[in-house]
Amino acid sequence: MSAEKTAISPTRSQDFPEWYQQVIKAADLAENSETRGCMVIKPWGYGIWELIQQQLDRRFKATGHQNAYFPLLIPLSYLEKEAEHAEGFATECAVVTHHRLEAVKDPVTGKTKMIPTGELAEPYVIRPTSETIIGAAFARWVESYRDLPLLINQWANVMRWEMRPRLFLRTAEFLWQEGHTAHETMEEAIVETRMIHGLYEEFLRDHLAIPVVPGEKTENERFPGADMTLTVEAMVQDRKAIQAGTSHYLGQNFSKAQNISFTGRDGTVQHAHTTSWGVSTRMIGTLIMAHSDDDGLVLPPRVATQQIVIMPITPKEDSREAVIASCMALAETLRHQTYRGEPLRVHVDTRDLSGGVKKWEWIKKGVPIRIEIGPRDIETRKVCVQRRDQPVASKDFPVKEDLIRSAAEILDEIHHNLLNRATEFRDANISTCDSLDEFHAHWTKDNPGWLITPWAGTAAQEDELSKQHKITIRCIPLDSVKLPSARSTQCFLAGQETSTRAIWGRSY
RNA sequence: CGGGGCGUGGCGCAGUCUGGUAGCGCGCCUCGUUCGGGACGAGGAGGCCGUGGGUUCGAAUCCCGCCGCCCCGACCA
Image (cartoon, rainbow, N blue to C red):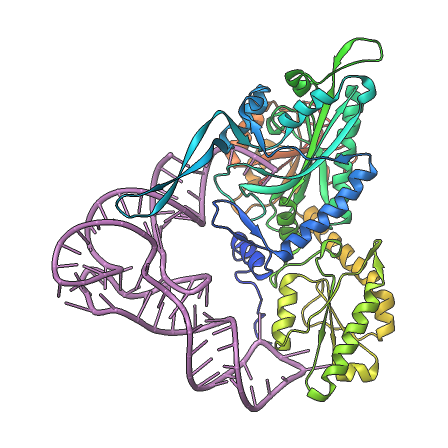
């Protein structure tokens, strides 16, 4: 046997960050644009986002939310209303200060330059998030307890002037959804915050095949202006953590700052309790790093732009038409099958390219099922089936009718294989620790994975440990989360008795 | 904002030290041979060498200014 050749180079173990970039390129998902820090999302990548959008949107609507749309530009003064929030985003805001361009001819070169003129009395900020402008609308909309709860979601782009952008993971402009709700009581708002948190967890597991740890952020890691931030944390293949979605209980901080008030059942004027929550195109980056291998992207079936690609094999000119007709017919039949309530997405690749080129292209693009049909298969009524969750060389030759019957089942198997693989990987890379010496010894250069510890430390102690090892507390996992539990129940710092567990890790 | 690097056909680069007006690989197009497979041969298209100025008979190459991008830090969905 010759050495294994991989479609992506370098491999994950050679250089993970570079591998990540190469997977995106090979799968044709996105590219850096001429606008600093911003990406062009190409059709194969945008297709994933559209599917995420559709499937999440259905869940938001099913839980009583409605979509609306708010302005891209936020009056600067709005951002000054909530002090903590303002401070949290101040360093990464793009600001619009002019509303007109004037064409000026350079007397030397003769070239025309466009000079901004018409300075605005009050500048606008391009939304880094929309709490303030949505809050202003909520203040107008809410008068009575009968107007509550107000359950709004927005699909939008936002901009944060990031210093170090990376495709999907951290771009200056990104796409997301932001839910914003207002409630009569703290209890109701917290129920909402937790409900969405659970919805995110399920979505990542059931749609993206990513197992996440649901938990709460410590005060240090909270969203600016929130009283409680819930997170779902995923582990990707370099053992780093990535925050895949957050749900915040904002208390009355924003409602007091923006006067979202209502007359209550008892006739008194009260401030609403608000929440906000979001997931972004970062989920695509998470998905790539969670599942892909050294041959490229591996797509979880539910968000695969195409789930099945059929490649006609046409070695002889005289059988060519029959082969293509057979492929088309199979595609049409498959499109009448459903997986998770949606028609199968099937593509027939009739491009006049050599078979090997096509096959590798679809491998690199992560298509869950590849089917090849040639003249021989037509005679035997069989098809050649290859799966992205299995080695490149492995093939199966079911009778065509059996494949049609089992296609959705195979997709489901692929989904579960990806989920199981990711879960096993994660669990194998979480260790426990209950002494400070062990803690310090754990954080070696090659990133050994997450550490779970009993925790009763202070914010200052957390901060110190974080800086020392370039780690953070990813979350305090919910009590219901089953993970290797720390051996003792005493905090590894000072030994206090505690039932609180903390997960520590390096993160994106 | 600190520290490094780089701007040359679609992409990746050589050429810059030692000025003489552009080359390689991949990709693309055509033809042929191959092909249950990331094949091969022949031919072809495509570049005011980031930008403005200077030196020179002559600048991708030397000098000065500007712009942009990438990597490593601080910040972060």
